[in-house]
Length: 138
Image (cartoon, rainbow, N blue to C red; front, side):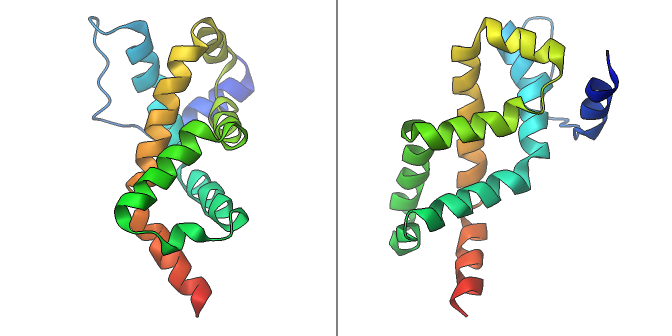
């Protein structure tokens, strides 16, 4: 393992709830061992990127009710391919070389897991976007 890989692994937060067991699938193992810690590490950047996405799309997000905001997040993450690819790059760029080799063997299924985790993290932070909008409006 090279220096970059060691540094990346040391930067990642531990997630006690992301259990690793012998009976889990390789995709679930990768999700709990790699994806969840990387997404948590990139949390602030992911929120900033989505805030920029909102801004680039004329701030219509802020005029929506809560249910529509959740739909907006869902559509942005799953249907806007340019944005989705940007999110994937933010996560994949934090993989070690070994993790990247595992990732490319089953990227389709792992991309789905990755985007689901990112989408949920953004949805769980709706209040952040409300507060950010209030600060801009002042």
